[in-house]
Length: 304
Length: 245
Image (cartoon, rainbow over all chains, first blue to last red; front, side):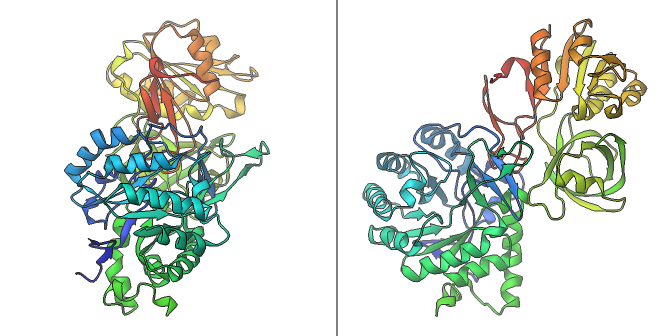
């Protein structure tokens, strides 16, 4: 194992940097910009059973040091992903990809995961029970420990690949959700999804987003994410993937000290399409600066 | 698309709330008129998408309107300032179907991308007519630039303080043309669409996250499937547009 490599639920990553779902499509656009094989892996666009157009526009609003989005899980549906997109991806990405799955019912999550379980190129499922931009699904599962556990158990029963549950920060006690997923058999958890937010257009006095509310992401989110990763990692033994406002190699180290085994980079990709490449290239120097010889040495040490 | 560090060479006001910025740097990724660039500004999280007015020999010209904090900051930048820009974004206009006498219709700050388009059309020996529509005289810009290219130019203002009083469609309905290209507010597109007698292309605007197709922030439905304004757009063909109410 190299100095940067980590083991996420039984699969070795060359480095812990993972573009987060919804900021990297299915990797195809970014593969025109740099060799995406340098990534640890990436989490592909949240995929549902049926194709979805998502919410009306405007879907994006800017904030200080961040942004709101209310895309609403636009995706071509699991059949098109399996039949058309994954074969195209296989030609350019040699590593295992993380399959991010969205849904509106327990049976839908199970259906989509089952359908993709035989895809060799998928390494993990990241089950998104925390999307704040869809109604009657998504976050409503991720804010209730009982519902989260039920979906976790159902997906675990249905598939062989490791299952990571993506958690919402919009909860009173993140440790309760983290423990519920662990007890129900999750192989890992990832957090945080976006914080529920809103902006109002001063010219009209009405919300900027057509969906009214949206998910807040970007560097302003970072300290909240570090705190929640630290809390969750302290509560469970399964690996935690740290997400939220990460935009530099130093942020990656901070997340890992807080307890993250791997780190997802989200909104930063949208502002700087080379963000993940730049972070990976900067990691060795940042590690040297802080006297870190291998990344696995620092995972969760903020707690000890 | 690529990322280029441009240096501002000029930035000045040319009409009410309208500025022209010229920049020096690699313009090789800008291949088609109607493409845009996405500019990183100090202190703002998201980039600012601005349409390309002209790009030639490492000189990039942008004409933009101050509509909020970001573009207001842009208007205060001086020559020598270096800017991180994603360049060559979007599909741009297809000059293929223009015919001999295409009509270019711009509304307000929608007119700049038509300049490079007009240049390319004249290079291929078409004889374009250009209608520029504004609210009033103090908003008018670009008339002489299009004339210098050799196009027939018509200016309209809603209040009649310059050119013909009325809207671009008041001129359009009396002209003969082989094809049309439009850029401006969506209300103008709808008015054009009611009276247009040929096929044509419209360039759309939407709030964007990334500007290069990653975030799905600017999607729209068309008769040829879902499209991202930033990637499969901003230019759409008349026959594929679904006009929502």
